[in-house]
Length: 209
Image: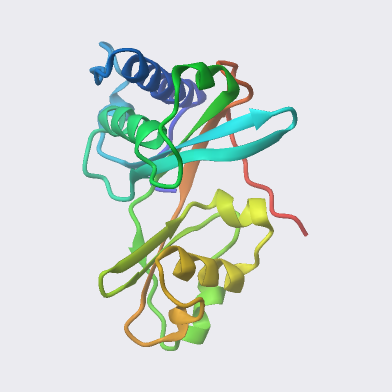
């Protein structure tokens, strides 16, 4: 991991994501970053904001959008990604204000994606680690990204992770084996609410054996 964020930084980002969505749903406005932002949160970072609906002990995806590359200062990127996740994820209808009491926010801060270099495509599974790496698959105009938590939640191995990332890109599942397909990996620091509007924790990924 090429950077470090404290638990306080993480709580700041998650609460900022929730506030950005709440204000946008109330008034349609995009909030500005607050004053006295910790310096680490002003650096440019890739980030994704995930919103999950909570029903008892179960959670289901409600929206997830972000920026894979460090284009914007982290606080600005979180505000934008949070609003986009809540209102413009094409897989879901826009969130309503009443849903805010029934969702939890998760912020994943990314390292810069690095191209995985191999002599043969069959080497890719050995070059990635489920529970640590996220993936980007690129082929021509097609691109798909999966965060590190996704294969852990679905109990995929490395090969299945590659196949599912190809599908996310709109490509055949075995496309990672074809010459010309590029595979990138990245890592994340993940922070999430334990309950709607509740305490924020650092999420540690644990792969099922």
